[in-house]
Image (cartoon, rainbow, N blue to C red; front, top):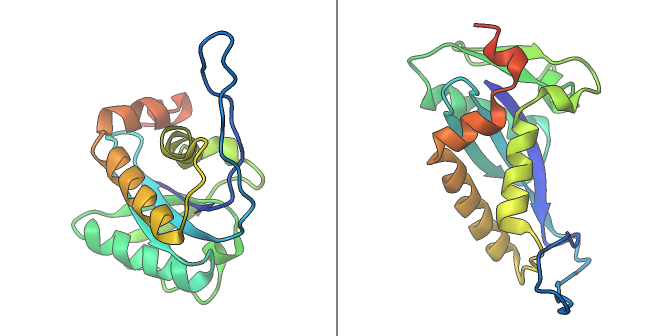
Length: 168
């Protein structure tokens, strides 16, 4: 599995969108700096994944995520690829017995298929929205996580990088 966390919130960035010829689309934009983090792990080979909404990208939250992942897949041993973020390599982490962490090369987000999952959630659910509250952000994140978790075929199409598929 590949793991990462991404920040989602009320600060949005307008993105291109379709409109009929001669119509200028109106897109909401706001600069409110409220956000939370969506932690995720994806298995490109079978499309399984898990998500957890947590308040920060720190060691404590990553520990909570690891414990939840270990519990959900308690009958499996997980080789979990992570980037070099400080919360992924902290000496304070207690790695569950059914998880082995493996670092990806430094400064190489293009090797982590979880990054593409974030793009999918942003494109499908957060594109050109100005959410009125953090509760609305949480609702959208739950919707996005369920959308991804329920579509294994989509996950495999997004996350099955050639170097991963050829590694089996």
